[in-house]
Length: 214
Image 1 (cartoon, rainbow, N blue to C red):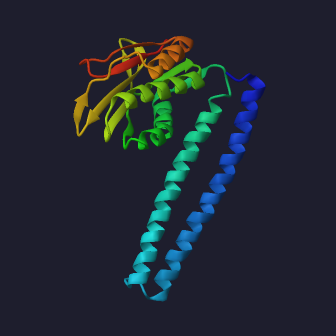
Image 2: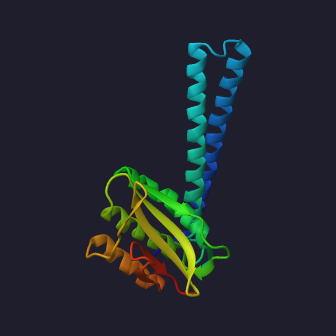
Image 3: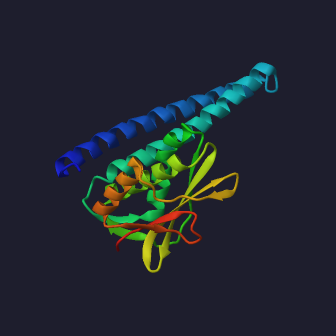
């Protein structure tokens, strides 16, 4: 874990970089809009070349949105270093970390989907360790699942305790996820020990959940 000065430095540099990246995306988006305006003004809308240009503009807009989402998640991750402990919205943490984990999932054509959870899921803990736990848990799931499988992450209250539930499915059919003696599970156990959390089998016995201390 970085100390307070190191964490502040990382947060400052990341915030500066993500600000500049947003400016880059804004220029790209503006340029795509200009191309669209030129095509419309030329009177050639509907011609083969104009259609190709418009499809390219559409792809640019999609990638700009994807880039903006990634920057938001990265910025949130960097700010998790700001305090040793703070109140964290579990739904927001799940959303951000799931997006960052998708790159790893893409390598096996897998998917990580955050599902909306219960409201008012604010918990005081180490934001960084929480994100490390989510990443480690997702990694455990990806290791057990085949290609084109989906990992869902869901924040909820379980017996009065804030929890994160992980499930896997292939083509809509649930796949069992169980603790195994692998490097990923050992890393998860270490993170959970530092976080003061525990892992248990989810209802139905298919997935598992991380139970956090309040």
